[in-house]
Structures are given as C-alpha cells and as structure tokens.
Amino acid sequence: MPDIQPQAFDLQSLHGLNSSARHFLGDLRQRMFEPQPRKVPPVFNGGQVAALCGIDAKHQNYLRTRPERGLPQGVPAAGGRRAYTLAETRAWIGALTTLPARPKGKSAATIATVNFKGGSGKTTTTMHLAQALTLMGRRVLVVDLDPQGSATTLAGWLPGADVEEKDTALSIFTGGDSSPKDLTHAVRPSYWDGLDIVPATPDLFAAEAALPQLAARADSEWWALLHTALQPLAPAYDYILIDTAPSLSYMAVNAAMAADGLLMPLPPENLDYASSVAYWGLLQDLLMTLREGFGVDKRFAWMRVLLNKTDATNVASSLVRDRIIQTYGPYILPVEIPRSPVASLGGLQFGTLYDMTKYEGSARTYAKLRDASDEVARIIDSLTQATVWRIEQ
Image 1 (spheres, rainbow, N blue to C red):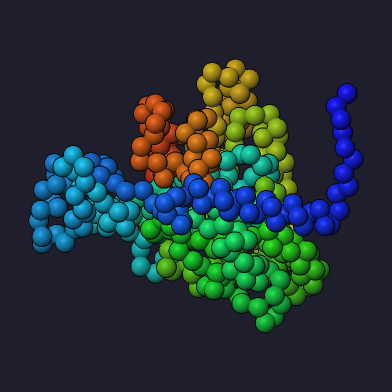
Image 2 (cartoon, rainbow, N blue to C red):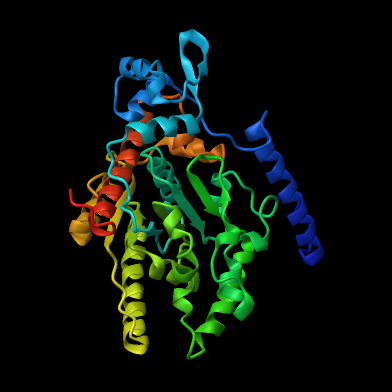
C-alpha cells in the first residue's frame, strides 16, 4: 500500500501553490519565446509572400524591383532569398489584393465564437480565423471574454503578468454609471500585425456576479453593454471576433447580442453534439424572453457550424459527423478542420498554426490543416460581404 502522507490544503497552501504556479508558467513562456522576451511573428520568404498575394514568385520578384510600386523590399536571407516581416508581407497583400474593401460607412462585422462545452477548439478557431483574415488584408480586433484568457495568451500577453483587471472588459459590466462605456481603454496590439486584442484575466469572473444584479433592474439593458462598448471601435476594424467562455453566461449573452454572425466549432463527438443542441435551445429561450419582456428582436446576419477535429479513420466519430450534418444541414460550413498533431504542437508552444512557417513533420499534414483554416476565413469573409456589408458579388 502506498505511503500516503496526510496534508491539509488551506488558504495558505493555496497562496503558496498560486505563487509557485505563476512562477513556473512565466518561466515556461520565457523559455518558449527565447531569445526574445516576448512572442514574435513569423518571417516570410518571397515565395510565401507571392502565394499570399496570389501571384508567382517570379512576378513577385519583378514587382519588388519596380520602385514606382513602393513595395517593401525585405532583407537578404540565406540562399539568395529575401525575408519579409509580417508587416511587410501584409503591405504586399494590401497592395495586390483583389478582395473588395469594406465599404465606406460600414463598420466591423462582429462574430461571436460560441459553444456550451470546453475542448471544442473555440479559442483556436477564433485566433486562426483572426490571423487568416489579416493575411487576406483585413484588420481584426479580438475581444477575449473568457476568464481563462487563452486567446490573450495566444496573442502574446500573459494574464496576471502582462494584463491586469483594469486592462480587460470587466469595467463595462461592473463599473456602474461612472464606468467606461466603451472598450477603447482596453485595446492593445498583439504580436501579430493587423490584429489587436482586448485581453482577459480571471478577474472577468466578477462580471458574472455583477450582471445578474443589473439584470434585476427594470431599466437595465444588461444584454447590450458589450454592443454599446464596441460601437466606438467598430469603424477602425473589418472584423471584431469575440471569444467566449464555454457557456451561455451573462457575458456570453452579451457576446451573442453584439454579434452579426455566430460561429460554432463542433467536434463530431456525442457529448459535443448533445451540448450544441442544448446551446441552441437555451439561446432560443433567451431571445424569446428578450422579445416578450423587452421588445428586443435580435436577428443574426448568419450562423454557421464548423466541423472541427474530424477524423475519417474513427468510425464512431464519422457516425456523429453524419448526425451533425443531418441536424444542421444548410448551416454547416463546406469545409472541415481535421484533427491534427500540428494544432497540438502549436498549443504546446503557446502558438498557432499561423506561427509556423515550417513544420518539422509531414508537409502534407500541415498543408491540409492550413488550407482548411484559410478556406474557413474565405467563406466567412464572403458571408460578411454578402450579408453584413451588402457587397454585391
């Protein structure tokens, strides 16, 4: 029988554990980002820049030599190549893109990534979509409403170390009449050009205590606080992506009510499927309550379900996948995100798929995941053009 030493766990023990855990997390992040003190974006070669611009490498090199185009030159790199920063790469994309621009007078399209269950890939989906959109020339703001702060960490900031309570969205939910009514104070750049973030910390949990008190007041439009707070920011971005906690909490309700579109990543597993059905049922009840009690008639420009972490070799998973397609029919995106070791490796390094310009494993495995993520962004952008910005195709 193992020798088990009794050990009480009290407030003092918790304080020691918390201090130790924060130290080790900070040390882990520092080791991951060495020799830089913070997360840095990838560097692109000429071929990669050309591919992102939809041209061949020869034409890209020709354009680089035309001074009248004013395109970034990059710097010499090994093998006679040239290296371009992310900002330089996005300058090339912006100059050569054929993508319709957001029309004048139109603000950002707001998208909430939603799910009832943890582990669905919600945060990864949000960040991959954000980065893919920036590589199409779009400007993106991510609003992290999950107290875990995973999106914040992926954006290069460590909750608790780099981000404090005052830097989050908390004040718009808890501050009372004197609190900021917008999120301008909380916006900060990420390590990724074209992508800003409103970060999160565990302090955001306090909103779930404050919002029920607001909801009890007859004159309170508690569900519209986030929508109101985003309005001053919306003209500066093409997209505002909201990452929510895996629930239909008061903050998640605010996210849904602020959104033009809803995106649900859904792994083909029975528990995830059942959870998705429960989410839509509760959302329906909520919208009915707001309509009948407050005259609020919420309409979304679009809703889509993204099959995530699919595995064609898993028979049980394939059966659930078929059931999901039968259930959600026209709402299913025509692209799936495969289960892949590439995504797991990115998470281990506090990174994303788009942080990798080289993958040490199978190039085909990387390309399959990258192509699927890029296609999701293209479809979402087309949906936005047609339904939110009303651009005729």
